[in-house]
Image 1 (cartoon, rainbow over the protein chains, first blue to last red):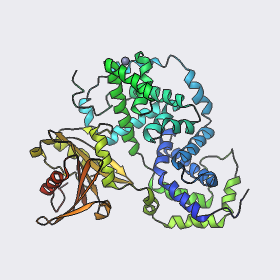
Image 2 (cartoon, helix red, strand yellow):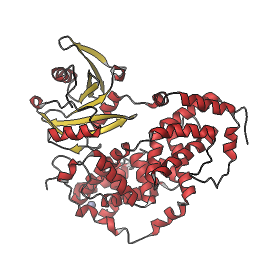
Image 3 (cartoon, helix red, strand yellow):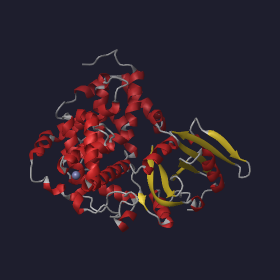
Image 4 (cartoon, rainbow over the protein chains, first blue to last red):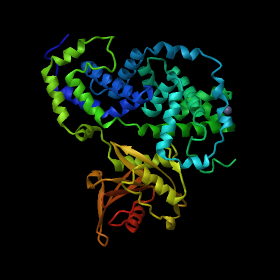
Length: 194
Length: 274
Ligand SMILES: [Zn+2]
């Protein structure tokens, strides 16, 4: 129902201004969740529309970034009907072995000529690799590593226990590393020598 | 603890998410396990790399406008079907003239205004970023060949401006790598110098005196007629000056008088050639 009279233009305007400052963050989350670029834009637009519709439920001074991100993820899950799949994948076994000895196989070394590739290409590599790992492992990486959220915040956004964030993040980083052989890291000085 | 059990704790250690007890137990495992030490280091590098990749994705220029316009005009065209909730709240929004007016008003404001409340000043950001680079918690491209490094940084800003390319060999410092950072759509070229003196980073970006932090102190070099701005935070010092349209900030734990003297000796009234 329309609740006339409760709307404070100043409050809403301030809300919208703050919302706009998270545009890069929201787009980044959507970009890495979505399959296509247009889809990412749609997700962000829908998130903003939903956020404004629910504007009165937001408590000023609390974590708007996390609140918006939760709206974005909820929309993504709802719309793409992925929630069930994301939860069930954890039960898969066997797949776990692919990452377990990764760190043994990849030398902790500067990848030589490859370290010269452009920053842009490195970022594109990460983006490609992220797309290759299942959503339930990708999500905590996006939230914690790209979104700077704590495990507790990520758990709240994903509506799952904190322990699940931690285990999926750990697994996810190993899966990601598997797809990034030879591209990881600007190694510390002296680390390359055995 | 075996290495498999250590894995999750290593992840949480990197994210600073461990209780004291867990932290102590993983640290003691790391002390005696070379394999896990390597995993720890690699995973930390991976995280840094992912963080760097994050900055490369920014909202397309027209998305902000589209969002504000879309909210004002109630889009029903294609895109994502709204089968779950129907048009309920959309029509609610449309019923509020005050709301639409507020949106239109916002549309007229430049994006810069919208960004201002959260905008981070680049010089203060540089002090933070310096610390992260030196600690290796922020990835950079290792490149000791000065020319290649310069070329790579130049390309990453489509040749719009060049890194300063200072020769600091007399201080015992040489370039070992660089990266590109971005704040509010502005790209900043970073060169890392290391050697026998405290590590130094040089930040270069297009800017004006408007970028000078409020708390900075001004020093004017009477001979070169260049203004230098000095500022510090947490033991990290920064000296900023402008060469044409290019701003240069030297950041280091070197004592301020030394860092300022260094900046004065290197600064030119005009920027380095592309
Ligand atoms: Zn171990």
